[in-house]
Image (cartoon, rainbow, N blue to C red; front, side, top):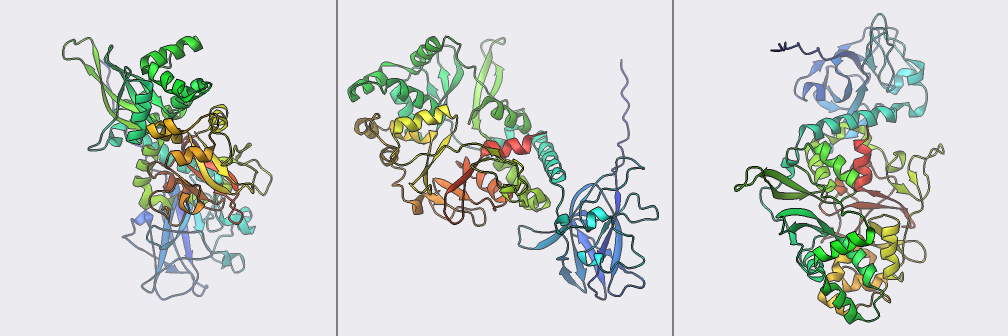
Length: 517
């Protein structure tokens, strides 16, 4: 047989990094994430430089946070890059870049980082902006590229993005779909023998946008039914002249006969069921959801049937979505999100979302620039439904004549029309978006009740607002934490003064950005 030999793991790369405190004191210590915020490193005075303390710590490549303890008091250097932690404390941070080879010269990532040893080859050097004016003779000169320009305190965005994506990928790859399944809960499953009207009414009553379908003949989960199917059904029957014919058409078909009719009309096989196994890792799950363009996927365990060992039995365990994965990710990193400087960047500095106009000062197309589809309260409901399908979007912002955001109409809102009162009261050909929202008991189009804003990442009104908004200056972290709330699928970017819509950032946008390799 083959012999396998355990190879010793390669020693982690450590980069000697020099820290500088230049604001005086009697005793100064260094403490940081690299000491687990427990141990301290004594800093020594620099000969010939009054009030200057320094120490060298070997750090692995990546982001690190740190603070100074000066005469028993926690201090941070305001001249160096800073970030607040979840407790409201302010820490300094540093990005240590790895050295590919002994001959590779160090790349400066901050004015507080530069080489320090006799050969100036492999050491980072932490110091404040004041050093540009009064570098002590015993210090090594800073690299010109890192010490020039007011904006040099920021990392190159590529480093931040790569580091964050690597950490996200490592976490998602190390956890499975099984961990998304709650200890208790329920999953609504609809039999394909149900009438179409009954099925959509069930979605309305349960307050869910989609549900798995059960084929009782073959005894298996055969697909999903969602708000998009309801829109498709409405579009096919809305040409009926009278409302009784609408009821008749809806009651004439079961889910099974409707699916068969759709298959014959398109002359193509029905879409195969896309599902996740509880053993799949979360990275695979997220990518599958993105590739399938589905908002919900069933988690199914396959096992042998008790009566037939050759026959596989499908056990539906739960439904999952990008929201569930992002929430799981956010819970894990909540206490350490501050360690990812990328998350502190404003939205308009990142290639995320769909924007009406580019906000990049250098003229680069940082965002996906395209026409944002909006509607007004007076827009015909049928036009809104068609636009949702044609533009392949999940929601349409509702604006007034001045372009100010007042509400939103999403695909899932169509399910609210599945109530008996809406069926009997609304005329689909004549109804407006405002009518649809009124009949669905969701909104009276009063902005104060519909729009949630950001503060500490929590909605300001209860119950949960229909619309979450932010400005282009809000941080990526704020948006990520908001999208991690159950039921939140998008955030509308508005102008702070005019409240006009500037862009949309969705769950898909965020996860796609973090998942890119």
